[in-house]
Length: 189
Length: 121
Image (cartoon, rainbow over all chains, first blue to last red; front, side, top):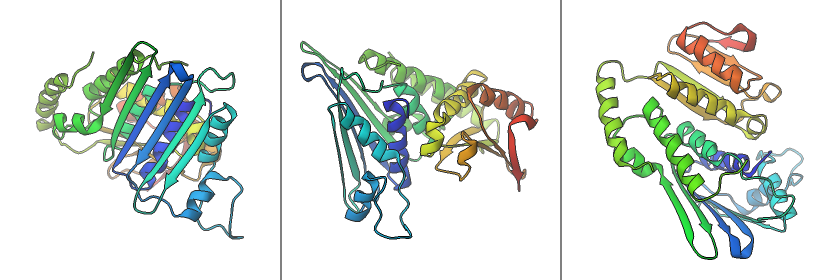
């Protein structure tokens, strides 16, 4: 993955596969602590301890014939965070969804760029109309905080059955996401 | 800044539109968005398709995504599904090729042989 927004998309896909109805994404840049914090939480099926362990380790297996297929997405994201003086925490239990919190030292030389966050959210929103996506971005400066909140639940309510893939709606979502994310000074390539 | 109030206008316009024709989707475009697809550029392919749908004002198109499709060597992969027509799979795509597929396949109803992987009923 070339940037953090692609990791994010990969994690959202995991949530959708786990039958999540809601995915909450929270991104913070905290200037005073030189910290980038990314949290992804879902209300999907969650994982038992064994699967949770396997999900973090690319080489982990308990059986010769691995029954639960686990990909490389999570281990790679974890490695990227830890390489940047950051941390990676994944918590999950069956029936209680999954949460991932990754932190990065914001000015670390190896930190991947955030990338096209708006594109990640727009494709995930249109790709899974049935799931509600909630995004918050926060830029916490020493003297002020800028916030952006986006939720497809409110948008769908307003649209009253008009599909999100209706052309004018696509344009609206694209502009809303780009403006909001740019306004919180998150956009970087 | 965009506000939710703007959506009300779009809703009224869309609801008028939808009364004039079938509310069913004419085309379903499915982008393979597994880990390998994403790493190979599937998001930018999907964004290009979405942009074309919006810019060309194409109605009744569902652009959606799925996990791994078992075609890892041909990612990014896109299926185009139409009622009572075989499913068409395109592979090794990039945003430019994806835009071309929207223009040719969806607008002009011609399969783009150059990027075709398979057709199946």
